[in-house]
Amino acid sequence: MPRKGFDSLPSTAAGGLGGGSPEEGMARRITFSYVVGLAFIALLAFCLHLLLDSVIAKQNDAATIINIAGRQRMLSQRIALAANTLVLHDDGEARTLLQEAMALFERSHRGLLQGDVELGIVNRPSRAVAALYEGPHGANVTIQAFLADARLVAASLRNDAEIEAALQRLTKLATGRLLDQLNEIVARHEAETRETVRQLRNVQIALLAAIVLALIAEAVFVFRPLVRRISGYMNELYSLATIDALTRLYNRRRFMEQFAHFHALGGRTGLPLSLVVFDIDHFKRINDGHGHAAGDRVLVEVAAAARASCRSTDLVARLGGEEFGVLLPNTGSQGALMLAEKLRVAIEHAEIIEGGVTIPVTASFGIAEAQQQETPEEITRRADMALYAAKQQGRNRVALAPT
Image (cartoon, rainbow, N blue to C red; front, side):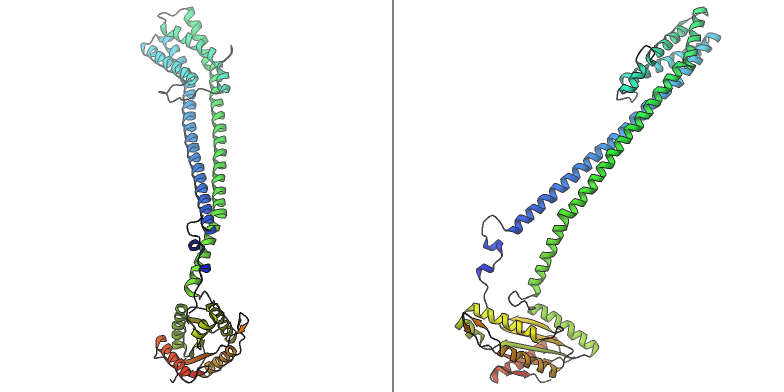
């Protein structure tokens, strides 16, 4: 039997405790890339989560501010109506309504300027909104004048010219400048909210695009090489499981699997099937006389001769050691005899030179045509008996097993 040298061992075994094989380095790089890619995607997803939270918070805050700012318009009208009712009818219920509306209006005004957690206003107004309140003609001045007249009316116990003038100013502001300024403030809040949400959504789209690009990059630069390497390893494992490493022929396991398949197919179709087994004559003498490297060379050359002599539909395998097998679908015993004789001659005339010395090689053959009542193992046993008969008859010849 040929022996595999230490130089043919995998690099992981030959490398001992060294720095690792190139495959290990590649695996580490792929793993690192995979982890970095996942971490980046996780970071983007976390940022997207924070952004969505921010969008929701902004929308909630903006909705609260717009609601309270809009309510100021309603309160200004309620204050004006309650003040007129109080002056005309001196109604205690109107006074209470006026005071409550004034208190809520004033608190909402402070909250819109400075924030009020209880009202749900977390942030101060932007510069653009704050500018609408500031200045000698700003809303703040108008609101203070409006509230001052409302307080004067609410505190009065008589109907005189001063109260009448305060009521007229209050009513004029509520239906004129104050209402316009409050409308402008609400419109500014709404516009800023739309712009803020638009910007946040643009950032959200950018983050989603970045996540998609990261996933594509992960697929292209990590998963595709990983799948390719796994596929390569699977092909290599399949090759190791089915292909003889030295001769590159099918091994015994694969040969018997195919034998069972073709035998079952022949049973269904009635097509003939023949098995040829052969081994190299006096192979131990070749190993002992010329060395195991020469023995390996002989095995390789015999395998090449078998491939060259057989048809593309035939299945050639190394069954073990110096023994080979050929499965001949759709071929009876006479066709198998012709092929075996052709192969015997090819092996006998092959020029195998090792170390400047020509090594003479012959082989003995046994043939068995499959019978439907037999199993592949029984057919193989008959072919082995024919091979034994060929050796008994002097070797370098073909023998046919009886049916």
